[in-house]
Length: 256
Length: 78
Image 1 (cartoon, chains in turn blue, red):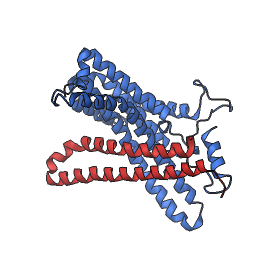
Image 2 (cartoon, rainbow over the protein chains, first blue to last red; image 1 turned 90 degrees about the vertical axis):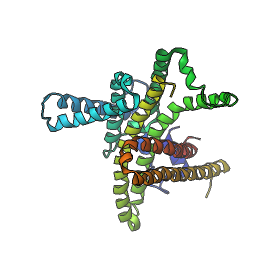
Image 3 (cartoon, each protein chain N blue to C red; image 1 turned 45 degrees about the vertical axis):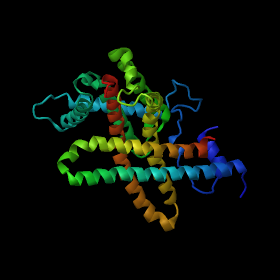
Image 4 (cartoon, rainbow over the protein chains, first blue to last red; image 1 turned 120 degrees about the horizontal axis):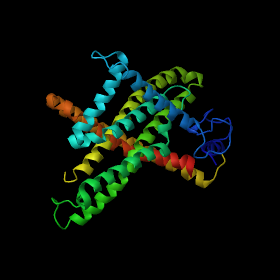
């Protein structure tokens, strides 16, 4: 039973909101309406493809001129590159810079998926935990592998704090291990939850706009929330990236 | 009003989950307020701490998002 069926059953037809705020996150096949398999082309995959195309277009156009005095397109591409490069270098240090392409890809994909999702009638793939969990657990697995490859078994020293009193160390180790494994969960749910909450909030205000008495307030509120969502789309891409950098720093230098 | 007791529980639980989101808002405000008061005392050090600010905001906000998620699950997935 899909989300819409439950919602319709719970609220009944025609009562309450005219449309349901979470209907916009429904994944539907683009061609036909068969079941959704892993290879089915859905609206989610379409908008992910748009995000990738937008990134490719931005960097192909941006790097075409290679001018000393950059054109507008080149400036934007350089701004993105420089921003993420500085973030990676500041947080992970010089030995983290070789993982920059991965972190830059993550940032660009989340940034563009978030912003394309804000277009009217579009679909926001980052609102799905299935999408963000792949990104979050991908970061978790890669960072853990880097940690063990770089530091060997000494990577486990991250959980065994030498500064703490001996009696407390096992307890702290348990807490550290739990918090380490919660990382990918919070990492992915933070992004999906923020995007879901924002889009649902816009839809809730859009539902109020159908009532004539509160319609002007509602329209102003939609504009305000939309502005907030533009901010959130950028900030969440930034936060995802900066947390990836921090996890990477922990893997490269577990002593800190 | 028809409906059963399980649905009543779902809706009450979702409302309680919304309280959690509100409490996370206090936490986020606390982070931002302390950053601002620190930044006004020593503006020259403020720029270097914006990354820390966003990380703090993200961590505080994540827990609010968790309770929002619990509310959503109660409403639509149970």
